[in-house]
Image (cartoon, rainbow, N blue to C red; front, top):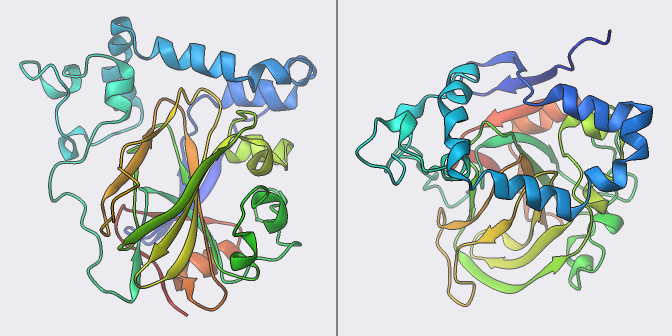
Length: 306
């Protein structure tokens, strides 16, 4: 019998290496490391399956699993607002699992760094970072390859990001699943790149090294005040019912404004920048070299001017 897959990461706040509990690790291992799973891989990664599963999280019966989920993954529910069933105690106040999944932090619980030289974390997530992306760049997730030219396929401004910095923020199913703008600015362009919906869990990446360039994703080109032009990519994943854009992109945004959210399923946000404009924070760079993600709170520093 195979051993449960473990993900090691560095927690910036405890300043210790920790082991992440992987939600659904058995299902992921079946899907990506078994004969039958590989045989039905097109079905597993299909939009129909993900949307069907995601829609089940909208049903009122799905709220029954919320209290156990909170307990099993040690979620500090006091950090979050109540759901729409305001007369219930907090862990029972969400009308379905998706409402719980996109729960909001209480006001003031997370604050974006006010330093104009520092980029705020766009998501509460586990981060990899590189000062420079090249076609040969290897993301240290069990040897997976992420090539800039493939990631930026269909992005009309892709030459703007040749040789520039890169941040990858991986959200787990247990995380806050809203993502935000890392600086002040405006949206230059945005569009959808159609694709599959594979898991973005490191266990899946261990067996499929092309997931980031195969998965469906939403691309926004942002012109920011302090970090130049950014390519902001939201990557879909298995069982993500929808990638929802909640901000009106015809308007200018402020650092910390909510940009959108993922419905059920873990997923990823990728940010690419112009060469020399900024670089990921030193602890992210150090840990990335060691093949370890860095856990960072929403709004905390993830990059600085180059």
